[in-house]
Amino acid sequence: MITVSDFVFSFSPDHPPAARALPGEVVRFVTQDCFCGQVTGESVLTTEIDMTRLNPATGPVFVEGAEPGDALFADILSIDIADRGYLCTLPDYGPLGDWCELRTREVDARGGVLRFNDLVFPARPMVGVIGTAPSAGSVSCEHPGAHGGNMDCKLVEAGARTCFPVRTRGALFQLGDLHASMGDGEIGGSGVEIAGSVLVRLELLKDFPLDWPLVESRGMIHAVASGPEFVDTQREAARQMQRLITAAWGWDDTDAALYLAARGDSAICQSCKPSDSDIVLRVGVPLEPSMPRLVPTTR
Image (tube, rainbow, N blue to C red; front, side):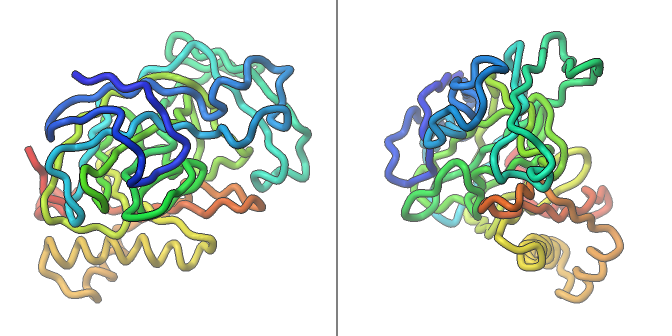
């Protein structure tokens, strides 16, 4: 097993690899929280930290044999989190920003449960930032995109299978920004931001081009798209699912659309408006046992 703890603040084909892995190898990613350890207690507000050091992603890992046009599977085998995390408000971030003051709250995360005020509820660790390098340029880890990035999809949890387009040699996979718990939409502006480690198996699917990442979790498979506006973002995610259906099942576009109307679901992963962050949205369908898989398995 490979262990990686180096981190970067962007996705880029120019980052030197922190490690190299063969398809099928398991990698342990040791992560910082999204604030890069700058929030150390409730007295530290988000306005007092270096905002250029947000969402560090551990990696990247060069996957041997990965070439543009392939797809990279990242199976989330386990997520271990630290004993405490933080819920924070940020200026102009999230739909309730006008009705909130700046505040940092420490959340006890020991024993698989979270304690907030008088409430105790189960921890549901998930990975917020995850993906591969774009073909050119650099994308901040604060932003999502067709490469993945800051997807903040709560379904990227232990037991999930994620799938990303490979757009540069070696894929250059990385992840970070763990949450002990985060609801769809990230309505208050943050999840329970926390450090930890993630065990991932990396596998390669040759010659399987994707436009957007996929997440297989809880008996469904989802396309995860992002963009500035809801309508266009939903169209992108739905179109990715439509293409998978027509390719795997031999249906035409119209029957695929009708199936999506009957069985498909759409949900917001992240929408922290009025910030300049893009909306992240997923469109998913059940893993139909009577039909071929929409994405071939490497196992």
